[in-house]
Amino acid sequence: MAVPGAGFVIESEWYWRIFEGNARFDDAPGTTAVRDFLAPLARLARDHFTLGDIAVDPDGDGVQFRVADQLVEIRCRGLRVDRFVEAINRALAAARLDVAFAIVESRRYELRGVLVPAQAPG
Image (cartoon, rainbow, N blue to C red; front, side, top):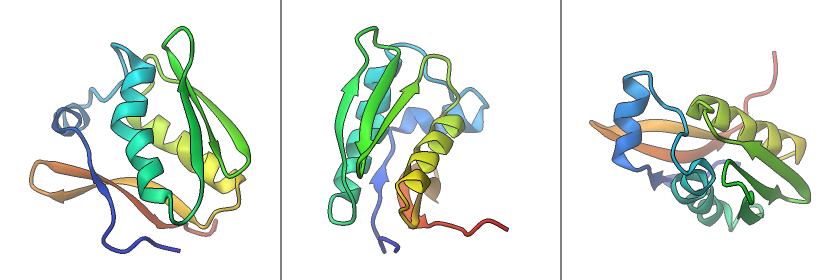
């Protein structure tokens, strides 16, 4: 399943952080992960699968959420954004969903979060 033409614009600061090699969650990592990635992803996915019960951990360093019926917990402080995307994709695979989350450059200086068909291993 793909979500054609769908996606969400990612905060422009991430563009520069990614391309300068400094794309880590630092200040308020849980809140940042929810605001910049998980909440928009949940809206994008809502007609295709459930990504819900999103919460920032009490210490603010991580997040938890549900994909389908799978509970997912990710510690975000210092985590590179590519590792965060990998963790989301492991959760999508564990829930047996045929999609993956990706960050793509949609046009110059703009990144979008999108859902794409999952690649079969091998």
